[in-house]
Length: 595
Image (cartoon, rainbow, N blue to C red):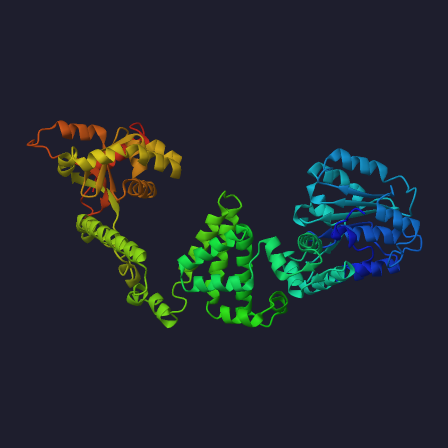
Protein backbone atom coordinates (compact mmCIF):
# COMPACT_ATOMS: atom_id res chain seq x y z
CA UNK A 1 0.00 0.00 0.00
CA UNK A 2 1.29 3.49 -0.88
CA UNK A 3 2.61 5.40 2.14
CA UNK A 4 0.75 8.59 2.98
CA UNK A 5 2.61 11.33 4.81
CA UNK A 6 1.89 11.50 8.53
CA UNK A 7 0.65 15.08 8.41
CA UNK A 8 -1.98 14.01 5.85
CA UNK A 9 -2.88 10.82 7.70
CA UNK A 10 -3.28 12.69 10.98
CA UNK A 11 -5.02 15.76 9.63
CA UNK A 12 -7.93 16.49 12.02
CA UNK A 13 -11.37 15.67 10.62
CA UNK A 14 -13.39 17.20 13.46
CA UNK A 15 -13.08 20.04 15.92
CA UNK A 16 -12.30 17.67 18.80
CA UNK A 17 -9.13 16.55 17.01
CA UNK A 18 -7.74 20.08 16.70
CA UNK A 19 -4.54 20.79 18.67
CA UNK A 20 -3.81 24.05 20.44
CA UNK A 21 -6.66 26.24 19.09
CA UNK A 22 -9.29 25.92 21.83
CA UNK A 23 -10.39 29.56 21.62
CA UNK A 24 -11.25 29.19 17.93
CA UNK A 25 -12.89 25.77 18.28
CA UNK A 26 -15.14 26.95 21.11
CA UNK A 27 -16.25 30.07 19.22
CA UNK A 28 -17.08 28.18 16.03
CA UNK A 29 -18.92 25.41 17.89
CA UNK A 30 -21.04 27.93 19.78
CA UNK A 31 -21.97 29.73 16.56
CA UNK A 32 -22.85 26.39 14.90
CA UNK A 33 -24.98 25.36 17.86
CA UNK A 34 -26.94 28.61 17.74
CA UNK A 35 -26.99 28.87 13.94
CA UNK A 36 -25.25 32.27 14.00
CA UNK A 37 -22.34 31.60 11.68
CA UNK A 38 -21.07 34.42 9.51
CA UNK A 39 -20.94 34.76 5.73
CA UNK A 40 -17.16 35.49 5.77
CA UNK A 41 -14.30 34.34 8.01
CA UNK A 42 -10.64 35.30 8.06
CA UNK A 43 -8.24 32.69 9.48
CA UNK A 44 -4.70 34.00 10.00
CA UNK A 45 -1.68 32.69 11.83
CA UNK A 46 1.71 30.96 11.39
CA UNK A 47 2.11 28.06 8.98
CA UNK A 48 1.06 24.60 10.07
CA UNK A 49 -1.32 25.72 12.82
CA UNK A 50 -4.54 24.40 11.22
CA UNK A 51 -6.09 27.26 9.24
CA UNK A 52 -7.06 25.29 6.12
CA UNK A 53 -7.97 22.23 8.19
CA UNK A 54 -10.36 24.29 10.32
CA UNK A 55 -11.90 25.75 7.17
CA UNK A 56 -12.64 22.26 5.81
CA UNK A 57 -14.09 21.09 9.14
CA UNK A 58 -16.32 24.19 9.20
CA UNK A 59 -17.43 23.48 5.62
CA UNK A 60 -18.40 19.94 6.65
CA UNK A 61 -20.16 21.12 9.81
CA UNK A 62 -22.45 23.55 7.95
CA UNK A 63 -23.20 21.02 5.18
CA UNK A 64 -23.49 17.83 7.25
CA UNK A 65 -26.73 15.98 6.48
CA UNK A 66 -27.23 15.54 10.24
CA UNK A 67 -26.54 19.19 10.95
CA UNK A 68 -25.58 21.93 10.96
CA UNK A 69 -23.99 20.65 14.14
CA UNK A 70 -21.10 21.37 16.50
CA UNK A 71 -19.19 18.48 14.95
CA UNK A 72 -19.44 16.95 11.47
CA UNK A 73 -20.49 13.33 11.61
CA UNK A 74 -17.88 12.26 9.02
CA UNK A 75 -20.22 9.44 8.03
CA UNK A 76 -22.82 10.97 5.76
CA UNK A 77 -22.27 11.35 2.06
CA UNK A 78 -21.73 15.11 2.28
CA UNK A 79 -19.01 14.83 4.94
CA UNK A 80 -17.22 12.01 3.14
CA UNK A 81 -17.25 13.73 -0.23
CA UNK A 82 -16.10 17.08 1.23
CA UNK A 83 -13.22 15.22 2.91
CA UNK A 84 -12.31 13.70 -0.46
CA UNK A 85 -12.64 17.10 -2.17
CA UNK A 86 -15.19 15.89 -4.72
CA UNK A 87 -18.03 18.32 -3.93
CA UNK A 88 -18.25 21.06 -6.53
CA UNK A 89 -19.99 23.47 -4.14
CA UNK A 90 -17.04 23.45 -1.70
CA UNK A 91 -14.10 25.02 -3.57
CA UNK A 92 -10.58 25.33 -2.19
CA UNK A 93 -8.75 28.00 -4.20
CA UNK A 94 -5.00 28.68 -4.05
CA UNK A 95 -4.72 32.45 -4.33
CA UNK A 96 -0.99 32.19 -5.02
CA UNK A 97 -1.68 30.64 -8.44
CA UNK A 98 -5.11 32.22 -9.02
CA UNK A 99 -4.37 35.77 -7.99
CA UNK A 100 -5.68 37.69 -10.98
CA UNK A 101 -8.85 39.69 -11.36
CA UNK A 102 -10.28 37.28 -13.93
CA UNK A 103 -10.35 34.36 -11.46
CA UNK A 104 -12.13 36.49 -8.86
CA UNK A 105 -14.62 37.74 -11.45
CA UNK A 106 -15.42 34.13 -12.26
CA UNK A 107 -16.20 33.51 -8.59
CA UNK A 108 -18.30 36.68 -8.45
CA UNK A 109 -20.36 35.54 -11.43
CA UNK A 110 -20.99 32.05 -10.03
CA UNK A 111 -21.87 32.85 -6.40
CA UNK A 112 -25.41 33.86 -7.40
CA UNK A 113 -26.23 30.30 -8.47
CA UNK A 114 -27.64 28.03 -5.75
CA UNK A 115 -25.61 24.99 -4.61
CA UNK A 116 -26.47 21.72 -6.35
CA UNK A 117 -25.04 19.06 -4.01
CA UNK A 118 -24.94 20.45 -0.47
CA UNK A 119 -26.74 22.99 1.67
CA UNK A 120 -24.27 25.90 1.35
CA UNK A 121 -21.57 26.97 -1.09
CA UNK A 122 -18.21 27.40 0.63
CA UNK A 123 -15.23 29.17 -0.98
CA UNK A 124 -11.94 28.51 0.85
CA UNK A 125 -9.31 30.96 -0.48
CA UNK A 126 -5.87 29.96 0.82
CA UNK A 127 -2.96 32.45 0.91
CA UNK A 128 -5.44 35.21 0.18
CA UNK A 129 -2.78 37.91 0.67
CA UNK A 130 -1.37 36.94 -2.74
CA UNK A 131 -4.35 38.43 -4.58
CA UNK A 132 -3.71 41.56 -6.60
CA UNK A 133 -5.27 44.92 -5.75
CA UNK A 134 -7.67 44.60 -8.69
CA UNK A 135 -8.69 41.12 -7.51
CA UNK A 136 -9.41 42.43 -4.00
CA UNK A 137 -11.54 45.18 -5.50
CA UNK A 138 -13.49 42.64 -7.55
CA UNK A 139 -14.05 40.51 -4.42
CA UNK A 140 -15.00 43.36 -2.13
CA UNK A 141 -18.68 43.86 -2.92
CA UNK A 142 -19.41 40.14 -3.18
CA UNK A 143 -17.67 39.54 0.14
CA UNK A 144 -19.74 42.24 1.80
CA UNK A 145 -23.17 41.12 0.60
CA UNK A 146 -23.03 37.56 -0.75
CA UNK A 147 -26.16 35.49 -1.34
CA UNK A 148 -27.55 33.65 1.69
CA UNK A 149 -26.28 30.29 0.45
CA UNK A 150 -22.60 31.35 0.19
CA UNK A 151 -19.81 31.35 2.79
CA UNK A 152 -16.27 32.68 2.27
CA UNK A 153 -13.32 31.46 4.37
CA UNK A 154 -10.06 33.36 3.78
CA UNK A 155 -6.77 31.94 5.10
CA UNK A 156 -3.46 33.81 5.25
CA UNK A 157 -0.14 33.94 7.08
CA UNK A 158 0.23 37.70 6.43
CA UNK A 159 -2.96 39.55 7.37
CA UNK A 160 -1.18 42.92 7.26
CA UNK A 161 -1.08 42.64 3.46
CA UNK A 162 -4.87 42.53 3.22
CA UNK A 163 -6.80 45.75 2.61
CA UNK A 164 -8.64 47.03 5.67
CA UNK A 165 -11.88 46.97 3.67
CA UNK A 166 -11.55 43.18 3.28
CA UNK A 167 -10.67 42.55 6.93
CA UNK A 168 -13.60 44.67 8.17
CA UNK A 169 -16.09 42.44 6.33
CA UNK A 170 -14.88 39.20 7.93
CA UNK A 171 -14.91 37.59 11.35
CA UNK A 172 -11.21 37.36 12.16
CA UNK A 173 -9.68 34.41 14.02
CA UNK A 174 -6.02 34.47 15.03
CA UNK A 175 -4.40 31.03 15.14
CA UNK A 176 -1.64 30.67 17.72
CA UNK A 177 1.48 28.55 17.66
CA UNK A 178 0.73 25.14 19.17
CA UNK A 179 2.20 24.87 22.70
CA UNK A 180 5.13 22.49 23.02
CA UNK A 181 3.37 20.32 25.59
CA UNK A 182 0.35 19.72 23.34
CA UNK A 183 2.63 18.98 20.39
CA UNK A 184 4.48 16.34 22.40
CA UNK A 185 1.20 14.69 23.42
CA UNK A 186 0.05 14.51 19.78
CA UNK A 187 3.42 13.09 18.69
CA UNK A 188 3.17 10.43 21.39
CA UNK A 189 -0.29 9.54 20.16
CA UNK A 190 0.96 9.25 16.59
CA UNK A 191 3.91 7.06 17.64
CA UNK A 192 1.66 4.73 19.64
CA UNK A 193 -0.76 4.31 16.75
CA UNK A 194 2.09 3.76 14.26
CA UNK A 195 3.87 1.32 16.62
CA UNK A 196 6.94 3.58 16.92
CA UNK A 197 9.11 3.50 20.05
CA UNK A 198 10.24 7.11 20.57
CA UNK A 199 12.19 8.73 23.41
CA UNK A 200 10.37 11.60 25.10
CA UNK A 201 13.36 13.96 24.81
CA UNK A 202 13.48 13.18 21.07
CA UNK A 203 9.81 14.11 20.66
CA UNK A 204 10.35 17.27 22.72
CA UNK A 205 13.24 18.26 20.47
CA UNK A 206 11.12 17.65 17.36
CA UNK A 207 8.34 19.81 18.79
CA UNK A 208 10.82 22.55 19.61
CA UNK A 209 12.28 22.54 16.09
CA UNK A 210 8.80 22.86 14.56
CA UNK A 211 8.39 26.29 16.21
CA UNK A 212 4.73 25.78 17.06
CA UNK A 213 3.67 24.24 13.72
CA UNK A 214 1.99 20.86 14.14
CA UNK A 215 2.33 20.03 10.46
CA UNK A 216 6.08 20.69 10.56
CA UNK A 217 6.44 18.46 13.64
CA UNK A 218 4.64 15.55 11.94
CA UNK A 219 6.68 15.99 8.73
CA UNK A 220 9.93 15.94 10.73
CA UNK A 221 8.81 12.86 12.67
CA UNK A 222 7.98 11.14 9.39
CA UNK A 223 11.48 11.89 8.09
CA UNK A 224 13.18 10.61 11.25
CA UNK A 225 11.14 7.39 11.20
CA UNK A 226 12.32 6.80 7.65
CA UNK A 227 15.91 7.17 8.91
CA UNK A 228 15.81 5.24 12.18
CA UNK A 229 12.97 2.76 11.66
CA UNK A 230 10.74 1.75 14.54
CA UNK A 231 13.04 3.26 17.18
CA UNK A 232 13.45 7.05 17.42
CA UNK A 233 16.21 8.37 19.70
CA UNK A 234 17.47 11.80 20.59
CA UNK A 235 20.73 11.21 18.71
CA UNK A 236 18.77 10.27 15.59
CA UNK A 237 16.94 13.58 15.70
CA UNK A 238 20.23 15.46 16.07
CA UNK A 239 21.73 13.56 13.15
CA UNK A 240 18.81 14.26 10.82
CA UNK A 241 18.25 17.91 11.74
CA UNK A 242 21.89 18.95 12.11
CA UNK A 243 21.22 20.33 15.56
CA UNK A 244 23.51 20.38 18.59
CA UNK A 245 23.10 18.55 21.85
CA UNK A 246 22.99 20.45 25.15
CA UNK A 247 26.42 19.21 26.23
CA UNK A 248 27.90 20.48 22.95
CA UNK A 249 26.31 23.87 23.59
CA UNK A 250 27.78 23.80 27.08
CA UNK A 251 31.30 23.27 25.72
CA UNK A 252 30.91 26.04 23.14
CA UNK A 253 29.51 28.52 25.65
CA UNK A 254 32.29 27.66 28.11
CA UNK A 255 34.85 28.46 25.41
CA UNK A 256 33.07 31.75 24.66
CA UNK A 257 32.97 32.70 28.34
CA UNK A 258 36.68 31.88 28.70
CA UNK A 259 37.46 33.87 25.52
CA UNK A 260 39.10 30.74 24.12
CA UNK A 261 38.83 31.58 20.41
CA UNK A 262 40.95 28.61 19.35
CA UNK A 263 38.90 26.14 21.35
CA UNK A 264 35.62 27.57 20.04
CA UNK A 265 36.81 27.32 16.42
CA UNK A 266 37.90 23.72 16.98
CA UNK A 267 34.44 22.88 18.31
CA UNK A 268 32.80 24.47 15.25
CA UNK A 269 35.10 22.54 12.95
CA UNK A 270 34.14 19.36 14.78
CA UNK A 271 30.45 20.15 14.29
CA UNK A 272 30.99 20.62 10.57
CA UNK A 273 32.95 17.35 10.35
CA UNK A 274 30.00 15.58 11.96
CA UNK A 275 27.79 16.88 9.15
CA UNK A 276 26.10 19.66 11.12
CA UNK A 277 24.58 22.53 9.18
CA UNK A 278 26.12 25.97 9.76
CA UNK A 279 22.80 27.80 9.49
CA UNK A 280 21.10 25.28 11.80
CA UNK A 281 23.94 25.67 14.30
CA UNK A 282 23.50 29.45 14.17
CA UNK A 283 19.74 29.12 14.70
CA UNK A 284 20.19 26.71 17.59
CA UNK A 285 22.81 28.98 19.17
CA UNK A 286 20.39 31.92 19.06
CA UNK A 287 17.72 29.81 20.76
CA UNK A 288 20.25 28.70 23.37
CA UNK A 289 21.26 32.22 24.34
CA UNK A 290 17.61 33.26 24.25
CA UNK A 291 16.82 30.51 26.75
CA UNK A 292 19.74 31.63 28.93
CA UNK A 293 18.31 35.16 28.93
CA UNK A 294 14.82 33.92 29.80
CA UNK A 295 16.19 31.77 32.63
CA UNK A 296 18.07 34.79 33.99
CA UNK A 297 15.17 37.25 33.77
CA UNK A 298 12.04 35.11 34.34
CA UNK A 299 13.20 31.77 35.76
CA UNK A 300 9.69 30.67 36.84
CA UNK A 301 7.95 31.46 33.55
CA UNK A 302 5.93 28.68 31.93
CA UNK A 303 7.43 29.58 28.56
CA UNK A 304 10.86 28.77 30.01
CA UNK A 305 9.98 25.54 31.76
CA UNK A 306 8.21 24.03 28.75
CA UNK A 307 11.09 24.74 26.38
CA UNK A 308 14.02 23.76 28.62
CA UNK A 309 14.40 20.20 29.83
CA UNK A 310 17.42 20.68 32.14
CA UNK A 311 16.49 23.91 33.89
CA UNK A 312 19.21 23.59 36.56
CA UNK A 313 21.98 23.33 33.99
CA UNK A 314 20.69 26.43 32.26
CA UNK A 315 20.63 28.39 35.52
CA UNK A 316 24.28 27.49 36.18
CA UNK A 317 25.34 28.64 32.71
CA UNK A 318 23.21 31.81 32.82
CA UNK A 319 24.95 32.96 36.00
CA UNK A 320 28.19 33.40 34.03
CA UNK A 321 26.74 36.21 31.91
CA UNK A 322 24.97 39.48 32.55
CA UNK A 323 21.60 40.17 30.94
CA UNK A 324 23.10 42.99 28.84
CA UNK A 325 25.83 40.69 27.54
CA UNK A 326 23.30 38.02 26.57
CA UNK A 327 21.15 40.55 24.70
CA UNK A 328 24.21 41.86 22.85
CA UNK A 329 25.22 38.33 21.90
CA UNK A 330 21.75 37.50 20.61
CA UNK A 331 21.78 40.68 18.54
CA UNK A 332 25.20 39.78 17.11
CA UNK A 333 24.12 36.24 16.21
CA UNK A 334 20.92 37.53 14.63
CA UNK A 335 22.93 39.91 12.43
CA UNK A 336 25.22 37.17 11.16
CA UNK A 337 22.28 34.81 10.65
CA UNK A 338 20.75 37.39 8.30
CA UNK A 339 24.07 37.77 6.47
CA UNK A 340 24.38 34.00 6.22
CA UNK A 341 21.36 33.80 3.91
CA UNK A 342 23.31 35.59 1.19
CA UNK A 343 26.75 34.08 1.81
CA UNK A 344 28.45 31.30 -0.13
CA UNK A 345 30.53 30.46 2.97
CA UNK A 346 28.10 30.10 5.90
CA UNK A 347 30.66 28.27 8.05
CA UNK A 348 32.97 31.28 7.88
CA UNK A 349 30.22 33.59 9.10
CA UNK A 350 29.45 31.18 11.94
CA UNK A 351 33.11 31.25 12.99
CA UNK A 352 33.23 35.05 12.81
CA UNK A 353 30.07 35.28 14.90
CA UNK A 354 31.56 33.02 17.59
CA UNK A 355 34.79 35.06 17.61
CA UNK A 356 32.65 38.19 18.11
CA UNK A 357 30.97 36.47 21.05
CA UNK A 358 34.38 35.74 22.55
CA UNK A 359 35.29 39.43 22.34
CA UNK A 360 31.91 40.42 23.83
CA UNK A 361 32.48 38.03 26.73
CA UNK A 362 35.68 39.88 27.67
CA UNK A 363 35.44 41.18 31.23
CA UNK A 364 32.22 39.37 32.08
CA UNK A 365 33.90 37.73 35.03
CA UNK A 366 35.63 40.90 36.16
CA UNK A 367 32.67 42.20 38.14
CA UNK A 368 33.35 45.48 39.93
CA UNK A 369 36.68 46.08 38.16
CA UNK A 370 34.89 46.31 34.84
CA UNK A 371 32.42 48.78 36.28
CA UNK A 372 35.35 50.78 37.62
CA UNK A 373 36.89 50.96 34.18
CA UNK A 374 33.63 52.21 32.74
CA UNK A 375 33.46 54.83 35.48
CA UNK A 376 36.79 56.35 34.49
CA UNK A 377 39.66 54.03 35.51
CA UNK A 378 41.49 53.25 32.28
CA UNK A 379 44.24 51.38 34.06
CA UNK A 380 41.89 48.62 35.17
CA UNK A 381 40.39 48.44 31.68
CA UNK A 382 43.79 48.18 29.97
CA UNK A 383 45.23 45.61 32.36
CA UNK A 384 43.37 42.78 30.67
CA UNK A 385 43.46 44.17 27.13
CA UNK A 386 44.75 42.11 24.25
CA UNK A 387 47.94 43.24 22.43
CA UNK A 388 45.85 44.12 19.40
CA UNK A 389 43.59 46.35 21.53
CA UNK A 390 46.66 48.05 23.03
CA UNK A 391 48.02 48.83 19.57
CA UNK A 392 44.70 50.32 18.48
CA UNK A 393 44.60 52.49 21.61
CA UNK A 394 48.14 53.70 20.90
CA UNK A 395 47.22 54.70 17.35
CA UNK A 396 44.17 56.60 18.60
CA UNK A 397 46.25 58.44 21.20
CA UNK A 398 48.74 59.50 18.50
CA UNK A 399 45.93 60.84 16.32
CA UNK A 400 44.45 62.74 19.29
CA UNK A 401 47.81 64.33 20.04
CA UNK A 402 48.19 65.39 16.41
CA UNK A 403 44.69 66.89 16.38
CA UNK A 404 45.38 68.77 19.63
CA UNK A 405 48.55 70.24 18.10
CA UNK A 406 46.69 71.41 15.00
CA UNK A 407 43.87 72.84 17.13
CA UNK A 408 46.39 74.77 19.23
CA UNK A 409 47.91 76.25 16.07
CA UNK A 410 44.49 77.32 14.79
CA UNK A 411 43.60 78.92 18.12
CA UNK A 412 46.80 80.96 18.06
CA UNK A 413 45.91 82.29 14.62
CA UNK A 414 42.44 83.39 15.73
CA UNK A 415 43.18 84.58 19.30
CA UNK A 416 43.74 88.23 18.39
CA UNK A 417 40.37 88.56 16.74
CA UNK A 418 38.59 86.92 19.68
CA UNK A 419 40.30 89.11 22.28
CA UNK A 420 39.32 92.27 20.36
CA UNK A 421 35.63 91.38 20.06
CA UNK A 422 33.39 93.98 21.56
CA UNK A 423 30.47 93.08 23.84
CA UNK A 424 26.88 94.04 23.11
CA UNK A 425 26.13 97.65 24.16
CA UNK A 426 23.99 98.04 27.24
CA UNK A 427 20.61 99.46 26.32
CA UNK A 428 19.12 99.89 29.72
CA UNK A 429 19.24 97.42 32.57
CA UNK A 430 21.79 95.10 34.04
CA UNK A 431 20.47 92.09 32.14
CA UNK A 432 21.46 93.59 28.83
CA UNK A 433 24.85 94.67 30.14
CA UNK A 434 25.55 91.14 31.36
CA UNK A 435 25.27 89.61 27.92
CA UNK A 436 28.45 87.78 26.85
CA UNK A 437 30.54 89.19 24.05
CA UNK A 438 29.81 87.56 20.71
CA UNK A 439 32.23 88.10 17.81
CA UNK A 440 30.72 89.30 14.57
CA UNK A 441 32.00 87.81 11.30
CA UNK A 442 33.40 90.35 8.82
CA UNK A 443 35.95 90.24 6.01
CA UNK A 444 39.47 91.40 6.87
CA UNK A 445 42.88 90.95 5.20
CA UNK A 446 45.50 88.24 5.59
CA UNK A 447 48.98 88.12 4.05
CA UNK A 448 49.57 85.68 1.18
CA UNK A 449 53.31 85.40 1.74
CA UNK A 450 53.25 82.01 3.45
CA UNK A 451 51.00 80.56 0.76
CA UNK A 452 53.27 81.88 -2.02
CA UNK A 453 56.26 80.26 -0.36
CA UNK A 454 54.46 76.90 -0.10
CA UNK A 455 52.82 76.80 -3.55
CA UNK A 456 55.54 74.51 -4.98
CA UNK A 457 55.88 72.25 -1.91
CA UNK A 458 55.43 68.48 -1.97
CA UNK A 459 52.40 68.78 0.32
CA UNK A 460 50.71 71.16 -2.14
CA UNK A 461 51.44 68.81 -5.04
CA UNK A 462 49.97 65.86 -3.11
CA UNK A 463 46.77 67.79 -2.36
CA UNK A 464 46.39 68.89 -5.99
CA UNK A 465 46.79 65.27 -7.08
CA UNK A 466 43.98 64.18 -4.71
CA UNK A 467 41.64 67.10 -5.53
CA UNK A 468 39.48 65.04 -7.94
CA UNK A 469 38.81 62.59 -5.09
CA UNK A 470 37.79 65.52 -2.88
CA UNK A 471 35.30 66.68 -5.52
CA UNK A 472 33.90 63.15 -5.80
CA UNK A 473 33.48 62.96 -2.02
CA UNK A 474 31.67 66.32 -1.92
CA UNK A 475 29.44 65.19 -4.80
CA UNK A 476 28.38 62.10 -2.83
CA UNK A 477 27.44 64.26 0.17
CA UNK A 478 25.83 67.18 -1.70
CA UNK A 479 25.86 67.30 -5.48
CA UNK A 480 24.96 71.02 -5.70
CA UNK A 481 27.93 72.02 -3.54
CA UNK A 482 30.29 70.05 -5.80
CA UNK A 483 29.11 72.19 -8.73
CA UNK A 484 30.12 75.36 -6.83
CA UNK A 485 33.43 73.92 -5.61
CA UNK A 486 34.49 72.85 -9.14
CA UNK A 487 34.88 76.57 -9.93
CA UNK A 488 37.90 76.66 -7.63
CA UNK A 489 41.28 74.94 -7.69
CA UNK A 490 43.78 74.28 -4.88
CA UNK A 491 46.88 76.45 -5.22
CA UNK A 492 48.79 76.16 -1.92
CA UNK A 493 48.93 74.34 1.43
CA UNK A 494 50.52 75.97 4.48
CA UNK A 495 50.34 75.19 8.22
CA UNK A 496 47.19 73.07 8.00
CA UNK A 497 45.38 75.53 5.70
CA UNK A 498 44.36 74.76 2.13
CA UNK A 499 44.08 77.79 -0.18
CA UNK A 500 41.57 77.44 -3.04
CA UNK A 501 41.41 80.05 -5.81
CA UNK A 502 38.00 80.75 -7.40
CA UNK A 503 37.27 82.22 -10.83
CA UNK A 504 33.85 83.57 -9.81
CA UNK A 505 33.03 85.50 -6.64
CA UNK A 506 29.52 83.98 -6.28
CA UNK A 507 30.97 80.46 -6.23
CA UNK A 508 33.49 81.56 -3.63
CA UNK A 509 30.89 83.14 -1.34
CA UNK A 510 28.65 80.06 -1.55
CA UNK A 511 31.56 77.84 -0.60
CA UNK A 512 32.42 80.12 2.33
CA UNK A 513 29.01 79.62 3.98
CA UNK A 514 29.59 77.90 7.36
CA UNK A 515 27.58 74.75 6.61
CA UNK A 516 29.14 74.31 3.16
CA UNK A 517 32.61 75.04 4.44
CA UNK A 518 32.26 72.53 7.27
CA UNK A 519 31.13 69.79 4.87
CA UNK A 520 34.02 70.47 2.48
CA UNK A 521 36.54 70.39 5.33
CA UNK A 522 35.12 67.05 6.53
CA UNK A 523 35.54 65.54 3.06
CA UNK A 524 39.03 66.96 2.71
CA UNK A 525 40.05 65.46 6.03
CA UNK A 526 38.59 62.08 5.06
CA UNK A 527 40.24 61.97 1.62
CA UNK A 528 43.64 63.40 2.59
CA UNK A 529 43.91 61.62 5.92
CA UNK A 530 44.31 64.77 8.02
CA UNK A 531 42.21 67.88 8.67
CA UNK A 532 42.75 71.10 6.71
CA UNK A 533 41.22 74.56 7.15
CA UNK A 534 39.66 75.83 3.93
CA UNK A 535 40.83 79.33 2.85
CA UNK A 536 39.59 80.96 -0.34
CA UNK A 537 40.90 83.69 -2.68
CA UNK A 538 39.94 85.03 -6.08
CA UNK A 539 42.02 83.49 -8.87
CA UNK A 540 42.82 86.88 -10.40
CA UNK A 541 44.19 88.11 -7.06
CA UNK A 542 46.29 84.97 -6.67
CA UNK A 543 47.74 85.30 -10.17
CA UNK A 544 48.53 88.95 -9.57
CA UNK A 545 50.31 88.03 -6.34
CA UNK A 546 52.35 85.28 -7.99
CA UNK A 547 53.41 87.61 -10.83
CA UNK A 548 54.40 90.42 -8.42
CA UNK A 549 58.10 90.50 -7.42
CA UNK A 550 58.89 89.33 -3.92
CA UNK A 551 60.25 92.71 -2.93
CA UNK A 552 57.30 94.71 -4.27
CA UNK A 553 55.90 97.58 -2.31
CA UNK A 554 52.32 96.37 -2.31
CA UNK A 555 51.47 93.63 0.18
CA UNK A 556 50.14 90.35 -1.10
CA UNK A 557 46.82 89.72 0.55
CA UNK A 558 43.54 87.81 0.26
CA UNK A 559 40.09 88.22 1.78
CA UNK A 560 38.46 85.71 4.10
CA UNK A 561 35.96 85.54 7.01
CA UNK A 562 37.38 86.02 10.51
CA UNK A 563 36.12 87.61 13.74
CA UNK A 564 35.59 91.34 14.13
CA UNK A 565 38.29 93.48 15.74
CA UNK A 566 36.79 96.56 17.46
CA UNK A 567 34.59 97.23 14.44
CA UNK A 568 37.49 98.97 12.56
CA UNK A 569 38.65 96.16 10.31
CA UNK A 570 36.37 96.81 7.33
CA UNK A 571 36.42 100.01 5.34
CA UNK A 572 33.37 101.73 3.93
CA UNK A 573 34.53 100.93 0.40
CA UNK A 574 34.34 97.20 1.11
CA UNK A 575 30.70 97.47 2.20
CA UNK A 576 29.89 99.57 -0.87
CA UNK A 577 31.44 96.97 -3.17
CA UNK A 578 29.48 94.20 -1.48
CA UNK A 579 26.23 96.16 -1.86
CA UNK A 580 26.92 96.73 -5.57
CA UNK A 581 27.62 93.03 -6.08
CA UNK A 582 24.39 92.04 -4.32
CA UNK A 583 21.96 94.60 -5.81
CA UNK A 584 23.68 96.01 -8.92
CA UNK A 585 24.98 99.52 -9.68
CA UNK A 586 21.55 100.78 -10.83
CA UNK A 587 19.93 100.17 -7.43
CA UNK A 588 22.76 101.41 -5.16
CA UNK A 589 22.95 105.14 -4.38
CA UNK A 590 25.80 106.53 -2.24
CA UNK A 591 25.07 109.49 0.07
CA UNK A 592 27.42 111.29 2.41
CA UNK A 593 26.67 111.08 6.12
CA UNK A 594 25.72 114.64 7.10
CA UNK A 595 26.46 113.99 10.78
